[in-house]
Image 1 (cartoon, one colour):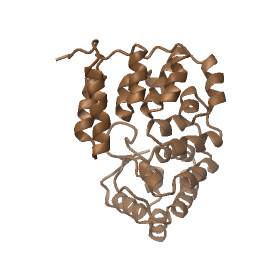
Image 2 (tube, rainbow, N blue to C red; image 1 turned 90 degrees about the vertical axis):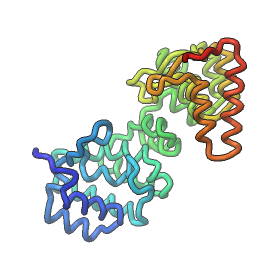
Image 3 (tube, rainbow, N blue to C red; image 1 turned 30 degrees about the horizontal axis):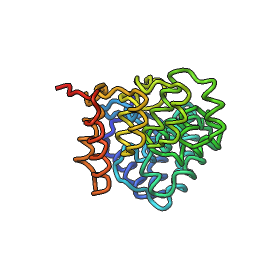
Length: 292
């Protein structure tokens, strides 16, 4: 089916009505132009929001506004029903991806509509199996809720949700990459106690999670521990043999480089102090060397 340009005035209006929570005028527009929910909107972008459907704009992910209207749940309910009626062939695909966007949306979380929005999409047929997307984007509440709705529980999820019995059960069955992914996730959240549990399972602290793991794959666990601002997590990994001179795959920065950058970007004295302490600790290690 032919796509519609995302700069089409009707598309711009429809998105504005979603952002404003104007259900009546949005439904009127979609009845007049049903192709707005039937066709993809070509936006000449790459990545997870390439050529979106209109439904996907409910999540504000990527962020455009930073907040959702007070009647957002009612609007989502109406929009889902409209997609079911007007675009039955693509409805399930639209709803599935919409859930991934919602589950990883900071805007939905801070607007207080995250969980009910996810429930609406799951009840409409979306697969709840996107908890890793929520975890990767710092949304533990969404990840936990998706598990309760039937999402697959991975070792990384069990670790970050602190499901102790599941950690040992899944850890005994996990592959090396699953263990490394869990270690990276624990480091990302600065969970030093869980890092210790995983290291006790003889997990190497070195390496990058595979792209298919569902978690960030451009850094090592030590990079992510640095980004968490948690010095004990950094210390545990270094003491376990984490390499200090490995650059990440995107910015070509070592863990120390990350600490230096984050120290400069820190929003307040406490955070600045955390990253300064991490930077100082890494510089004190004899294995540290500059790459440039």
